[in-house]
Amino acid sequence: MFGKSTDWRKIILPEEIALIKFWADLTGARDMPQRADFVVEDIWRWLPWLHLVQPMNNGTDFKYLIFSNRYSSQQTHERTGRVVSEWPDEQKTKALSSYKAVLKHRRPLYLAIPERYDKDTQVYSRVFLPFGTGNTVEHILVMLTERKNPGEMHVPAIAIEAADINALWT
Image (cartoon, rainbow, N blue to C red; front, side, top):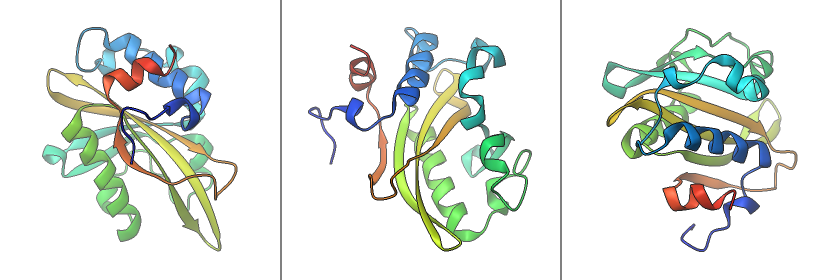
């Protein structure tokens, strides 16, 4: 679906691009930055939309170290400190699939899918950014952004290649 001709700037929102650039700047010549490379003040502008996730049990489960307060008020359960395996099956399957893809590719991942809540359908886009040492993803920073128009888009999970990342702001 997306190849070398994809203009990600038409898909990814400006704040998402800014967060990806922040990640890329931290990365430098490495495959990914380490979690210790930033402090909370560095990500303050995005904090209401961020989750910090830690892989557990060799990537078979994931724990939310931080679950965004912007969206936690819309949830029926507090998810900070909880693991994905405790979620309802449909939500669990989607989350595990995305997080496992980040572990596999060790690259930023982007997706936007329609989701049904009660009687409404909403599209959220997600940017997944890996943090770790060497080839091991130790944390995943996730930006969750509500798209204003539910019919706006549907982008399956796609790993964003390095050349595409650099093209976001050039």
